[in-house]
Amino acid sequence: MGALNLLELAARKGARVLQSSTSEVYGDPDVSPQNEDYRGLVNTMGPRSCYDEGKRAAETLFHDMHETRGVDVRVARIFNTYGPRMDPEDGRVISNFIVQALKGEPMTIYGTGEQTRSFCYVDDMLDGLMALMECETCGAMPVNLGNPGEFTMNELADLVQKMIPTHGGSVYCDLPKDDPRQRRPDITRAKGLLNWAPKVTLRVGLVPTVAYFSKELELSQVRPATGMVEGGAA
Ligand code: UDP
Image (cartoon, rainbow, N blue to C red; front, side, top):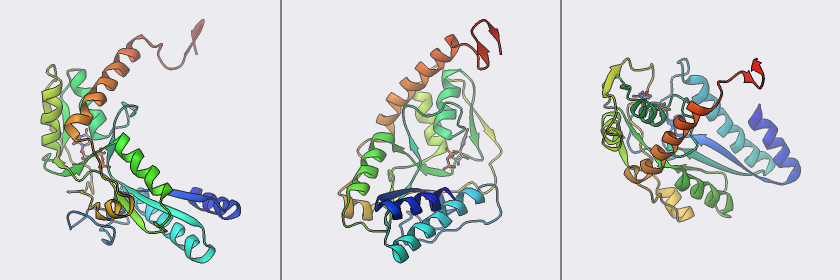
């Protein structure tokens, strides 16, 4: 409904509108890397399905509004992105591992840790999104934005442990249902259309990210607990 509302507004105003779509449209892909022509392997009835299918349906709405009403749309398929200003409690792997390591708690590796992801630093992602919005020839075709550097969760855990010597080791936990086994963007289209490619490697991007989380944790120790107001507890 949000996508449809924005598309209607864009149609009325003649505005260009961006869909921040996702690599999740590829589901649990059986090809690697994933290019934009791959149609995905998505379970319609799993715990991730409403997100995956919601984004897929929104892509269809963007496509149809472009075809039938001439709305000026752009569609970015965003792969895993990280960096300063993430929510320390969002439950994603980079935030979880860094926060756990900083607290000296074991990092929770789900499954065998051999599943892969490709992590893009936020500054690179923003450059890609800006380039896509400024592109005059891109039209409605979806464009993968992400960093093709692919890592297993075990490799990520090792990297974080090397950066935070006071870490508390790691522990293996159950793998969530329908967790994709691999994910890696083919960014040929983005390179060709936008002259864009990520510049920041995971090793380099983790440095400001760890510094940010460390500061956040310090601040959370001096901030009053949620729900407290001046003069007493809410
Ligand atoms: N993961 C993990 N430990 C955590 C959080 C996530 O091993 O504490 C794994 C998760 O199972 C997945 C990968 O890390 O295989 C990336 O998870 P995230 O939620 O960050 O992104 P997504 O699965 O949406 O790509």
